[in-house]
Image 1 (cartoon, one colour):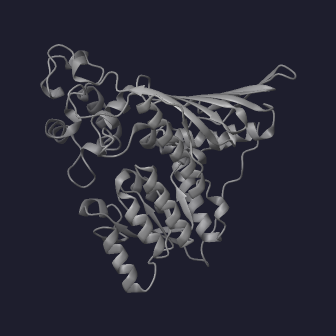
Image 2 (cartoon, rainbow, N blue to C red):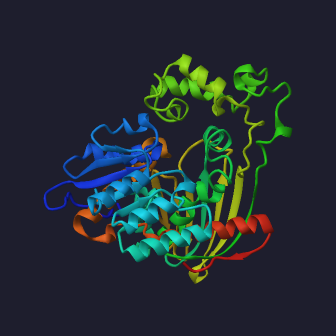
Length: 434
């Protein structure tokens, strides 16, 4: 079995827990806070900034602020940071100002991905945190999973020889895509960011991380092929609760959300429809949310515009090639990867890695066990290890615990922007250096 890297040591700052402020107490922010709450000897959330009182109430032990500006004002009144670090987990288009201001105020920063929806804004963030000199991590959680540790350890061991190519599939899942990218907050590029950035910057970053190669050139094709008005079934209504075609529709909101309510009792994805503290999650409240909110509307009659399928062909540094496919039209499961080398090849499915060594024709299977596939189940352990690594970096002063720093993250963002230019223009695009 391939030896996995050790987890960070149990540390604190001068015998006290690392203090963390949370900006944005939505699903992602509260997920990161979960690890901190579970490890009070190592870290504590001491401040939470969010305009919603019910969101702030999820962390009752933390001092509440109505937003990052109020937190910044309190910081200035205090004469310095109120915490050792801050997690910025606001929406995609609301990262630049808080990250820059809080980094300049002296906070170490962990920022949700994507950094920002434009190349110029991403470069501004990276330049700003570098000038501030503070530790900076980006939430590329796939870098931090035990499965990724295993894949990277196989590649780095040399058993595959020289890496010549990679084929990587992101199976988003038909219902997950309908939830998040047709009905949800990531459905439109102008509200969040393009799909290749909002969802798949994880994957472009992962490809560079496990291979150790930079993405140099890209060509991309993709479209919104299915979730369009002309594809609505005959008799389709505007809302699934009043639709004659609903029983035979794979994207039916009742088929998705009522079983999810019974299964989770109010967890993801129900907490997107009935946010914590606003109402008791039950069938009556869910019915109201489906009738009045965006999650009950017909997927063929929404205002979405992000792609439901996309392919990116890449040339990596050193001459290797890679192909990435994102598609909505699968089960919601682990990423699937094949890595080709001069002396062997690797197949990975999120739970196990199979390595075929050409030198002795041996086949070895390395099993990491079951790991979660998405944000609802911690990204296969990546969410927890990311926060743990950030806390350890602050406690020890050793920034090497942060695997996704400014330079690494900017590189994958630039590749995503180049892929989107290619998709729109029909061109082969060079990825600028970070």
